[in-house]
Length: 404
Image 1 (cartoon, rainbow, N blue to C red):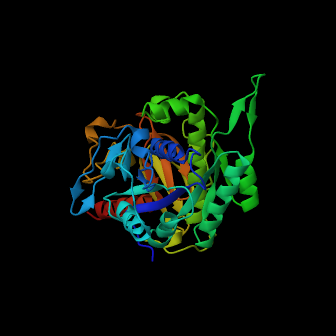
Image 2 (cartoon, helix red, strand yellow; image 1 turned 120 degrees about the horizontal axis):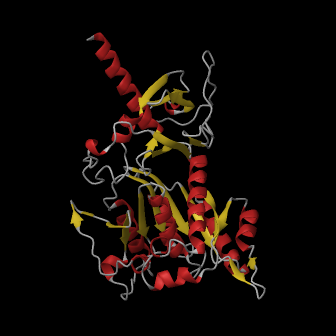
Image 3 (cartoon, rainbow, N blue to C red; image 1 turned 60 degrees about the vertical axis):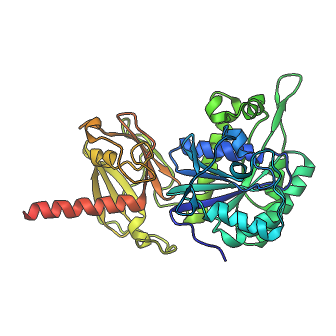
């Protein structure tokens, strides 16, 4: 039976049918791309037979410490990392039978102090054996991402792995094709089509291609991940696009799109503004699964300016909440502003301008807003539930002030 992982919103299995397709490279750079978008990300190297995450991140000499009988992950480039390689070394073989594999899988996922995470990525070993089955039975997976290369053999084996997840009722988030193209003698790129063919055969989403780029191999050999060591490389944007596509797929599985839809609102030019409800209109919303609040209470149906100092959020239950810009900036939840381990706020209020304003607001899947501030800060994600809490708290405070 799967166990809940407190504090972790989404657990994503990254799988491949065979080895050598660059699954771990995809896992590392996808984790970094998500972190650079402002998400709180963990990366678990569950490939217990051939752990490569420590090498790719330059962490071979690291050893995690224990706290309250749990492993403390290594933090690297704003992601939290745990790997079998930290404990047995990169050159030591892991000789394990089925029951021991299950035990290690459980330890590396449920026995780690991950803290609060938006995404926990699990880099699986290739194949369809005990590791994959153990995960399906012990971890509440949001879904699986399948990595393939364009070759027909890779696609054929990847399809078997994909079908295995379907049989154990794990949603397939989509397929990504790694090492996707090469330069012809004329200099024109020649894309393969294996990954797209796999997605069509299986009836799942195709999330994108990662092109052949020698910088990817160089970064791996240098133990400097591509998105950190070579941010101008051709493949970098492909990983960022993959991260965006993954977020969208998770949103569809987790709760579907909100009435606001996907948007990017430039508040300076007032272009791209989302919908807002006119007075007297009644919101219409399909019921969804239970949450801490009723679904209507944490589903925004409108967003508009409140003069020059704040926003008005209109909720599907008919209520409106006004939030001021500086108040929102001061409670930014990102790792720069809040210590992830202690919850202590690191942001010094005096460092935030009194006239700080939102320069842009964009939707993040179906559960949060990302705000770019006039002081240049842009890494905080404001979950709808948190915005509802802030709106209610402000309304109570204003009501108390008016009474006094």
